[in-house]
Every structure is written in structure tokens, then in C-alpha cells.
Image (cartoon, rainbow, N blue to C red):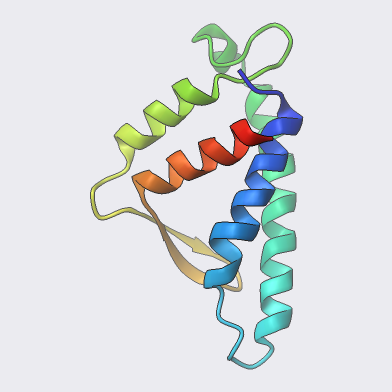
Length: 115
């Protein structure tokens, strides 16, 4: 189980270490786009996470306990099982399309657990 704060910190570290370096800066306004994308991602993590744990389904299935701590291992296991071999593509404003793979979930989980 991990606290919201641990998840937020781990997600920010993941974004900084794994996503941000892949954002091209050799394009017009590239550095500004990179800063905007990272700031936007941090905002989405913080707001999205708080909304997600408020969903009663998560506590019903045991993903969130009565203290609001989250079962990171269980959620990661489910996420990994849903990601196809060729990755999961998402379109991110400013950046375009990003692909996340099963190992990215494991990396994120490690950042969260390291605190």
C-alpha cells in the first residue's frame, strides 16, 4: 500500500526521469513545450489521482483501504495485464502520441515504492 503523497512523488520522478528526456527540444519552442508538458503531467497526476481514489469501486475491490492508501502492486498487476505487447498509445497535448509499455508500469511502481 502507498499513500497519495508517495504515488504523486513517484509519478513525478517517473515523468522527470523517463518521459521528460524523450520530449524533443530541438523543435521550435521545444524547451517551452517540454516544461509545459511536464507541468501539465504533474497537474494531471495530482488531480486525477485524487478523483480516482474517491471512486467507491476501488475501495470495494480492495484497491484503496480505509486510510486512503492504494494497493500499487495490485493496480500495477492489472495495468500490466491490459497493455498489449506493442504498448499502449496515448495522445498528449503539446507532445503528440506517446507509447507506454509493460515495463513502464514496473518502472513507475519502483519510483513509487522508493518514495
